[in-house]
Each structure stands twice: as C-alpha cells, then as structure tokens.
Length: 216
Image 1 (cartoon, rainbow, N blue to C red):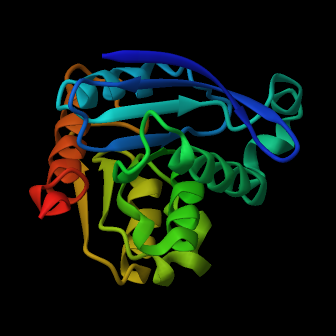
Image 2: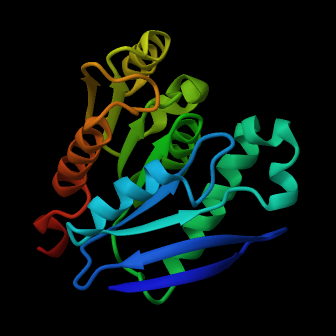
C-alpha cells in the first residue's frame, strides 16, 4: 500500500492531500469534505480506511488553504469549492501513480454539493458518487446533468436533511438510490452508524466504480 503526502499544484494555490493506493487498486475515491472540515476529518478517514481495504484508493485533500479557511464565508462558497475539486480531479487524472484508474467522489455535508456539481462537469469521467449527510440541494441546478450513479445516504433522525435529499433525488436523472440509516443523526455519531455508511458506500463503489467491466 502506497501512502503519499501530496502538494497539489493548482492555478492559484497549492493544496495539501493524502493519497493512499492499495496494492492492485481497482479505482480511486476523491473525498470532498464539508464546511470547517479538512483532510484530517476523523469520519472521512474512517470511511477511507474501510474503502482502502477493498482495494480502492482514496484521496483526502484540503479544498482551502489555511489562510482561506480562516475566512468563514469561504467554507460555504460552493463555486470556489467546485472549482478546486475540478482542478484537483484534472491533476489526479494525469498523476502517474493512479493514471487510468476509474474515479469516484465521496461528499459529506456541503462537500456533497461540490462533488455533484463536479460530477456534472466531468460527465462519464466520474464513475460513482456517494453523499453522506449531504446537501445535494445546494447543487440543484446541475443535478440533471449528473451521469455518475449517485447514492444519497442520510441519517434517519436528520429530518431537515432528509427532505433536502428527497428534493435533490427527484432532480437526478442518473442511476440513483437514497438510503436512510435508522437512528442516525446528521454526523452519524451513534455507535456503528458510520460503519453502516461505509458498507453502503463500498457496495456502491464495488458495483459502479471498480467493476470487472472496466477491464473487458
């Protein structure tokens, strides 16, 4: 398993990232975290570690520099976050260690909106999207353009976000599913709930990201 600490050079900034590539990787999942979070998010790292065990690589990176993150408004500037995710994905597609591997997205909270908008931008290049407690409603105008199979995961006790996800689900024209995890709140902090999220995400990626059809 390769563990790489990256400086990702974009047009205006250089972002920090952690890329982990298991032996014989069949795909790679790029994480787009929510507001106020970073590549060190304990929840995303736990999900990433479980994904890696299934021979799927992960990239966790900071969408904002330290200076940018200190400006509160930047955390909710979806246009800025989308442009960062798009540029990082373009960089990753050329990066020698993972070139040619199918790419998926995992978006949490507001990060789900940037993941879906970036997926709409890339079309068939992005093979699968998973949203955890996401705000896909913040990407409503782009949802009809998403072609990547999309899984929306919401906590059963996260009532406002369930409604937001239902609204977004209706706008998606791609292969899609919405899963409600019983007894879970917004951050899936209850015992075992984040593992349930991971299991759902892994099943989705195995079905749509790292399938045998990639090699036929």
